[in-house]
Image (tube, rainbow, N blue to C red; front, side, top):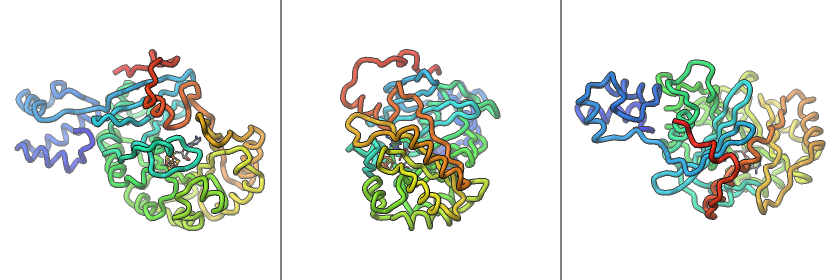
Length: 361
Ligand code: SAH
Ligand code: SF4
């Protein structure tokens, strides 16, 4: 049942001759209480509960591996019914807890610095598989019923494996479930969708979902961006920034995030920082500087701390907030997609932290 829209759930109930309000009760049990067993749904009659159990399941993806970092970051390798795997990461911070969710198995795009882009097998995740990541994290964090405050899972970012705007319909369906007030109840303001620049889908994303937008920019000239983010050849920087200028609902209070991976000697000069500032003029923007997460065989190195600081100072001085993303979970393989590749290669020995990381629910 996980991943059915409200309308689909209502249609299922109608099809088995149940009253319409049953769909609402089920919704509450599944998404607010986190119930997985129909027997626990005590507001439903016994006969109805057993009828549901005969026909449906409230499922979760299988956890193939679970790792905990010494810094509190948790990473799950999830396996779906067809054996395909994706990663999902929870990053606790002082004032929030962010869940990084995947939208595809692998990615059809081949950004040069991204490990996910090296994986050949690609398919879209279903809405069920996307919502399933949030459900599983809630299980592991022990966050049922959905707490009103003091949550450990406050934010969701679509920054895991895959390009979410290449799987728009399923992502949209999943996010509507995640945002539903009577269920998981995460506000659209706490959800950020990151895209490498699928320009034709950006406006629709803002209009229909109203979530925060993050753009993987990574370069300030088309010449360099063509090589780092090959999708740039189709949708060059000027077109991408035009779509950002028109993004529905963006304002100084709700800025668009520009992600910029810091690659040593490639895109990290002061001149490029100044050009970035020039490009962003007129866009309510903030810049997220991401020190490159190395992976075996990667053709880049992380920028030096001094280069990152200088870059950040220039962007800051122009009035844009430009926090440097602190690398997290480095002891449990930080680069997105690494855990999955490791598993595909047949990794057997459990790295440090694994034993302690099994979901608690
Ligand atoms: N496909 C989408 C969302 C997933 S990638 C996108 O590209 O935006 C999420 C972010 O992680 C992107 O900004 C991506 O460029 C960045 N990223 C990928 N590999 C990285 C690495 N090895 N080190 C640092 N950032 C990386
Ligand atoms: Fe795909 Fe994003 Fe990785 Fe590029 S950075 S290959 S779009 S997941």
